[in-house]
Image (cartoon, rainbow, N blue to C red; front, side):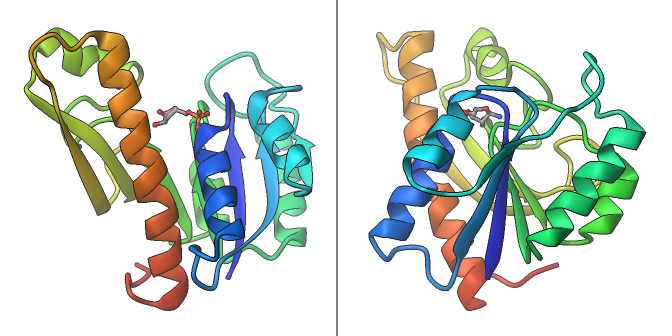
Amino acid sequence: MKVCILGSGRGSNCKAILEASINQQLGLANIVGVFSDVQGSGILKVAESYGIENHFLDPGSPKAKVDSINEDAWIKILRCYKPELIVLAGFMRIVSSSFIQAFDGRIINIHPSILPSFKGLHAIEQAWEYKVKISGCTIHWVSEDIDSGKIIAQAPVRLMNGDTLEKLTQKIQAAEHMLLPWVISDLSTGTIPFL
Ligand code: GRF
């Protein structure tokens, strides 16, 4: 199963996926390309260090979306890789309905909360401020409504007395790094069905 990863940040989830691949823990999945809307971002450097093809794709807009003309170019480039799965791993832009339709039922996203709680930006901070005792991460299919697609898998983390926001962030990211490679592997082997 050919997989493309899109992200905007450090790339720790991408690294976890590529480590899983090296350790034969990614089932039948093969990471064929990594893409970012941020030039010189950590995720592109991670991909480079693992010898994976990686590209900056110009979003053409400083806003939270990708300009439609640029997005058409993104779709063309991504199609060259014939991805059977697209993983949004810390991708901080909203994809349009035409992007979703171009890869219909084949885009997943990781979100750092137990959805449907704490959608949108700063989910970890939202959960922290709400003083929840359990949080975690969710992997879901990408639909037109943000952070609202069908849930594939979730991993909980407990907040213990004395935990800080930084500690909660670390716990959630550790959960992400475990869950995301696992879900990709299970999708590749058919253990988890596609939509
Ligand atoms: C992750 O916590 C993800 O849930 C959120 O952004 C973060 C990306 O981290 N949407 P990284 O770039 O994978 O390190």
